[in-house]
Image: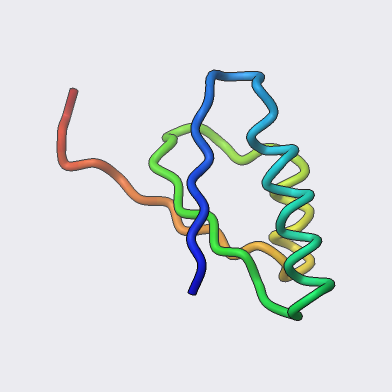
Length: 67
């Protein structure tokens, strides 16, 4: 199973790139993309739409480090 890591500053386009990538994977292979995130904030709108369509599966994780 291929793995891709997206890292960048806020506003750098990570969510947009994820959406484009997830749609391509779904069209080509009919497979979902799994987003594993430790960000305590909400999901971007494009990710919510793709989650609701069954293209992205979201796993929210929490860190053990309180800081």
